[in-house]
Image 1 (cartoon, rainbow, N blue to C red):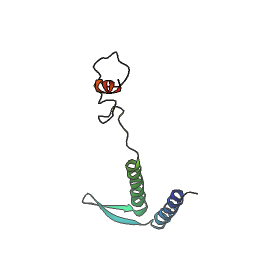
Image 2 (cartoon, rainbow, N blue to C red; image 1 turned 30 degrees about the vertical axis):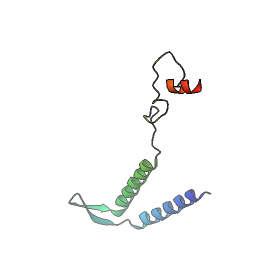
Image 3 (tube, rainbow, N blue to C red; image 1 turned 90 degrees about the horizontal axis):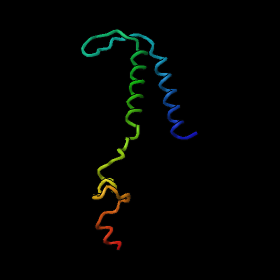
Image 4 (cartoon, rainbow, N blue to C red; image 1 turned 90 degrees about the vertical axis):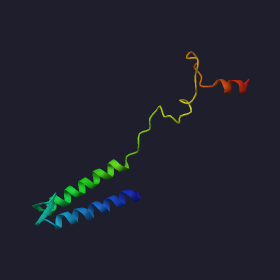
Length: 95
């Protein structure tokens, strides 16, 4: 078992124990309105919301395929019939 899986399992078990032990109702103030809710509902919704935020934040960013810093997009290709990506300066240096 990897370290990440083990930590996730321990956090899930602790969170489950915490939620199961707090089943009584309490008064919560949500946007300045007092609401009587079960602690289970509040803890569960906060846990699910935190999980979703964590998933969204940890996703890798998508890279644009036509990036401005890409060496292919910076080449000035004057003749559209050319299939290579060498500039005229590169062509002179090689020959």
